[in-house]
Image (tube, rainbow, N blue to C red; front, side):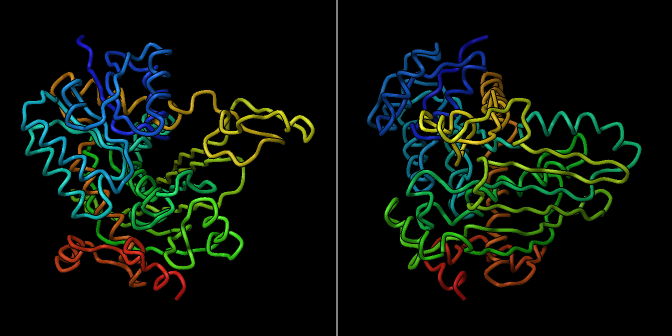
Length: 414
């Protein structure tokens, strides 16, 4: 099969994770990277691991001439402008097949729709990178339960939690540049995976119809004076003036359009999980059966005593977002595969080579943005939002949360 030449726009945390995943994916090579911070190291890693010999390009338009597909891994606030450059490059003759975008597709519904419109207008195949829907731990459990579901009925409740101690980069903490706080950053995962677990066998990712949303957003840890000072000194972000939520929880209700049955997804996300590191916890409950996933349960553990801890160089070698370098620690031997990065990249490569959109296309990314923005609206209004109400749906088209406009104090300190 022909190789898919991929260009990375961005060379930060997520790009490096996908480069690790690429070691486990056939029929692709990394040929181009935008010349920004970390690009040289990423290019060297690719070459050392047989992923390709990528060249560095200062402009997106020039990069587009040297690959078959581009992956947008840059910060949220840059993505729409980058997509406009990609569309223009195609118009000027760049022979691209497709475009990938890491979640979220946009900070608002308007941004997401524009991203999808630009891709369609350029005739590009699309793949929306929502890695958790590709997690083998989830999908293998679902496959095992399919015969039971056929006999007993589908899941009625799904719950998803994602938590860690907080992002690595300043722009992630900035609600204006990021698009919000933990709900925007990780709630998009949790809402999407709830819907995925609840979706009946053989149905499309958007089969279930969203009918209601309720949500609460709070600032619990990072609004305290000690931690506000830490954020300001470390990242230059002032949560006394422009705070974002570090905790969000809510319930989204879906309806099966064929049976009329209502099912619910409960999501919880936080930036204050000061334990081993990133924790993904999901479960699904059906009549007479259940499933449960916890990413911190590993077949491998290590122990590091206080004295020995002085020699630890990087706690994150064992686990993403690790906050500890001593004690009993979980070790995940293949995080890229565990979290679904390998499978989502394999899906995009195989889909593009066969002239198809990815399993999750950018229209799906628009749908996720719709639900995340509905959650922000529900939290602001402190009421359950009716997602079947045409007036509400119209409002969401132009809605931008107070938190993402830098006015989080009105919501979180009130």
